[in-house]
Length: 341
Ligand code: PHE
Image (cartoon, rainbow, N blue to C red; front, side, top):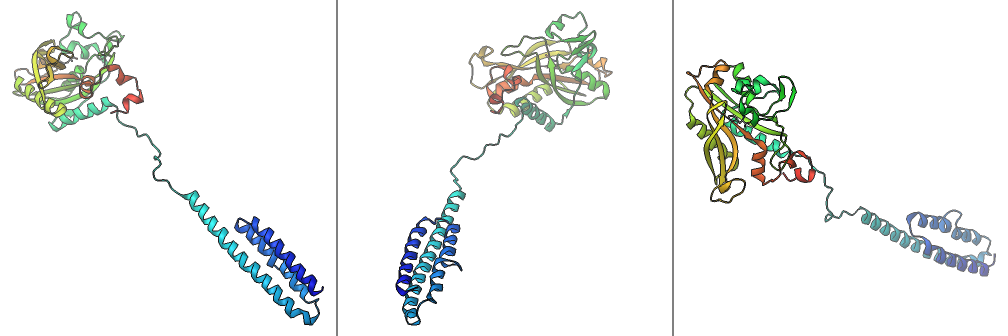
């Protein structure tokens, strides 16, 4: 090789570099570039090898030329390396960036059915007052549901409880009052219980009727109980459940198993609006002093103990609390409705 040829070769390599280096955009391509120019078999290395074929007096000048070329390419390569590395870090950061303004993943949480919430709350109120929670079967016998509650077969009051009969003498309980009988028969007085439960009546479903609904029964039997105690318990309950600002009214009613019998109404104070009842009064339960015949039936002595009971509608409580206007909503399991409570 002549010095002129070597010089021309240097120029060629310089051009090759100028061309090849523009297309290296990632660390791997830059490394490939390094190998193909400065590696053991790279084009710069090859020109260095050619140096030996030059006449000795031409080598020093050519060597300078070559070193300059190598220096150029080396520093250009370093610049390129730094650049692609910066870019790689930049794009990794961009890919990993968290946008904290994005809405989070919404995981729906289950919640208690409004009727369960109300039931538990009412149980709590009475447990704090010293009542135990009792329960009884939903399929009852005629005896517990009616007979023992002083409602014999031909009694006109049976019409008030339109029943689902399963077979002769067996029915779905129409109220929670049969649990009164079961509890009193199983223990001597005193008795202080509440019993929540499902009840069934042959009512056509509409905004205020459902063939299945829930009641909470309360029963307190002990020496010396009077109507005044009942009134006190009712006042405590209304205040605890509805809060202040409600007034309560007790008026006469009739149930075969209580004497006297009463119905309890409440109304928001100062609200004389005619909603369901004239004057804004809403019935929340039936109540009364346990009839002597019932006490005798379970083996208690009505001369020794007296008692009172009530049965309140759980759906009615929930409807009043949340302003729900159709009882059927509680049984349709529509999550759009249920998730509001
Ligand atoms: N069991 C009655 C009903 O379902 C309510 C009630 C319970 C009344 C206890 C008086 C005493 O209508």
